[in-house]
Amino acid sequence: MLALGANLGDPLGQIRHAVHELASHLTGMVVSGAFQTPPEGSASQPDFVNAVVAGTWHHSARALLGLAQRLETSAGRTRPFPGAPRTLDVDVVFLGGLRLDEPGLVIPHPRWFERAFVVVPLLQVVPDWVDPVTGRSVAGLARERGWLKCTLEEVADASSMAPPETT
Image (tube, rainbow, N blue to C red; front, side, top):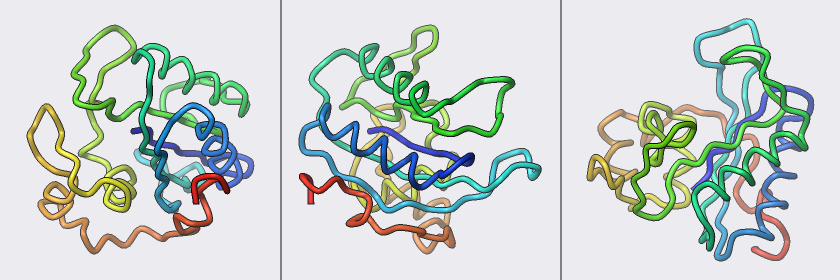
């Protein structure tokens, strides 16, 4: 599962483009709606648009990270400082039940459960998914955090986010 976010240029367009690119690499792909969310830690940048993609990946975790980084680069992402605004951010959240902790790659993503902008879209695509580290389901976590009735603004529904071949 991948979390997508953007807050520069055309964020919704960048995420849709990434989803279309991912469709040729993942099988059984499912896409959440897109949600507008405030930036974490800095109010001096535009709101983000966030979504998640779930599907089956048939290669290594490093290869998936490489794909994510290529998508970011092709969208013009730069990294001038941590937390900088971005044209596209693609994070590997889960990869099956894999648990991995290597330099530059930790799966599951170490902070996924702290972020409504990841959990709320995950509710749409994999509510019963169980985190292999904590043993908590996405829906259970959302319930614990009070995010089942989250006020994130959905700016595009899932059907408008999916590539034509996956609808």
